[in-house]
Amino acid sequence: MNILHMKYAVEVAKAGSLNKASEKLFVALPNISRSIKELENDLGITIFERSARGVSLTPEGGEFISYAKDILKQIDHVENLYKGSGTNKQKFSISVPRASYIAEAFVAFSKELSADPAEIFYKETNSERTINNILNRDYNLGIIRYAENYEKFFTAMLEEKGLSFEILTEFSYTLIMSKENKLSKMDEVHFDDLEGLIEIAHADPYVPSLPLAKVIKEELPDNIERRIFIFERASQFDLLSRNSETFMWVSPTPEAVLDTYGLVQKKCVDNKKIYKDVLIYKNGYRLSSLDKKFIAALTDSINKHI
Image (cartoon, rainbow, N blue to C red; front, side, top):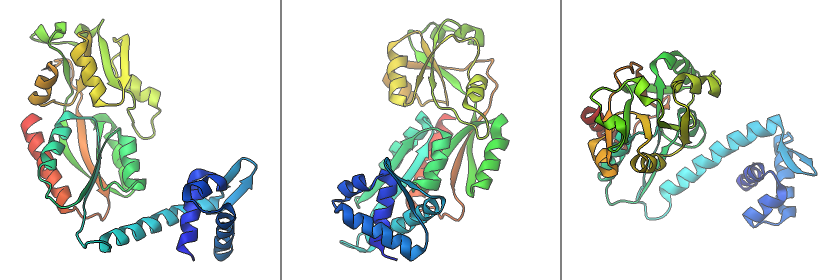
């Protein structure tokens, strides 16, 4: 089997078109077409169905492309490892929930990097994408978050997908808001005190086997009529610090972050719900030295703030 033909097939599958793959690879269209034909003949399968709108993968083709991607990744890894100066590049990758205590750990971790070449990936997203990043996108570590009452859904799914998991910490959400928010002056905050305010919420909660609408309904209080859904922490801090009518439920937040944005943190005495942050990685994966450094920084942040 020709590795170059395999690369062409992966690019065609990604582009959904021989023409687009040809343009992306800077390879003449007849050469791309001939390579795919030779690959299909070598394997004895049809990888692509051709149509006027482009190409689509057959069931066998989809299976082959999945294997081909893994093979090409391994080839790239070996080439990167042994080519060039011989200096191994430091690599670290993790997907995490949008949490300030984790971001603080990442900052501390970044200060521990040596002067050697490094390639670091830090992705804030929801639990579904974190799991997908580990299974399909070469991320080594992930942290997922779920409410305690959903634990059975997550543990069953993690075991099914061949992922190891370790509980990092447990907590109840706190409220954060501007110092100008009326809640900031209260000694005790109750659910009823939130009525009439604007809640900032992340737009993509996730629980396996449950529809999004059901998860949102169970996660968000019914007494809030105005919500702004966002996907990133930068937006949430801009809104919270500059609109005194807003509030947000978050994991415990470091004082340094609160001071930076002029926010205060309050516990809601009515809120008894427990959440868990869980470290995940593929079964059999051996933690690297960088992984261990990050986990040490994370443990220190948890001890300080949760």
